[in-house]
Image (cartoon, rainbow, N blue to C red):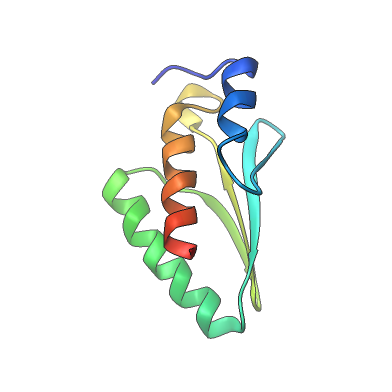
Length: 93
């Protein structure tokens, strides 16, 4: 998969609400009502990631979920990351 250029990343981020570029990854933090809601959403996201064979770096602390996306094989961001971020946003709603 082709690594995105800086211009391509900037353009893609304009279409992703709340995602930011940090350390060659795009990241977003979601806040839920409680731990159960956060964990249930993580489970839903995990099935989508497995289907795509593309897995995030993530951290869950109580009702907060931080997701970081990068394509390790490309050593940076690819269209796979942008597409997964869109799917995650749809899952979270």
